[in-house]
Length: 556
Image (cartoon, rainbow, N blue to C red):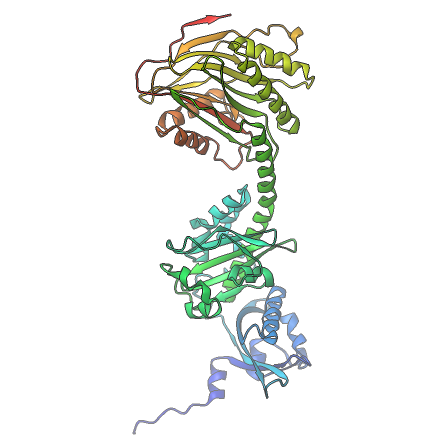
């Protein structure tokens, strides 16, 4: 027999592959289904009267919502066609994955619109895809992102949320190469995590919500955007072409962040070689976006309150540290990351009448505005006593009496030192504060035990209020560290354990004094749940030497 071209019967091919056809009139709600389409939906003759509403009991509620949204986009002109996966309830109690593709057609320009398309059993489509929902379809799609969701729940700032988004715990389950985050602030979108090429550092960090940018558009419309080609993306956003240099993503999903009905911001999720976003992808990313929105909504007020607390606290700290010929001084302050209350930690450095340097660090009891106010008053009073040229014992004695007279029922721990950087002579007294640390020129660290007395502000009738002091000598190249207990203490942990941790960080830190200060804060206060504020003050004598800080005597 000769070669014959096989006969093609479109209707037979559609039926054999279980592909049905439909036509829907939005104006009347009338829906036409061919026999194959009715089989795909599992409809009995009595269950279908020719209305689209007949399908609602057959389709899961969340899927019906998705299909309704896609149809609305089609009718409004936001889409030319749609493609969606959804689940159909069968009479035996199972659910079946189904796929529909619809297109808007008009008999003439401006005429009545109809949606026509095809529908098919999509069980085989989703049998092997990595991003389909698990076989037990009731399972929460966020289970695959459980580790990332847990990290989001622990985040205490927007920056920490952004860190979670950039980690493998987020990227791997989504199959994404990168994620960007924009947060809505006073009508503008602030980029917290930006995904652009290295040569595009001028990408706007903040933009008006009305600007034509993908994240801005999804916030404004509360509708996601999906792109499976660079061409389609640049066709809509030609001005972003220059930011793609060196960035290899070829597909992207842009998702609005909403929580409790409020717009929070938007996510950009970027992919390599993604040709389609299935319903399972939509479900997973939508669920993830909800988790991110909840996290951002929770931490934004914490960030703002923390900024207010830090601004109030910093306003009460010295605006500048005096010049220190013969040495260097570095200071740092960090508010508590757990909670948003201001604290009572402070530091100060003043020039003394004899040309020396007066250094103080302290902590007023409590974490509230009263503690901060008392801290400000006490710091100013101590600076005035120091400027009068008093010795360490007198300065602390006067400060204690001053705090007691305020009748606040608060006490404060404090250290006060007089340092002559030209000779290295140090005079130091302590009022119940943790001991200083000394880093020698070779990097070894010692704990410096100072003579002293009780915390400041205790009533005189409680007994001893004198503050004996220790004299010592600071060798060239040595660094003295004063700190508050927020740098050391952790709930339930022995103080000496925290002190050893601080000594190790101090010893192993960089040689530059400013970098060393940052290193100590980053190492010891970087946890998301730090419960206390922390202050530190370091002084280093110029030069290099090996002479240790030696106590010369104790004066009562």
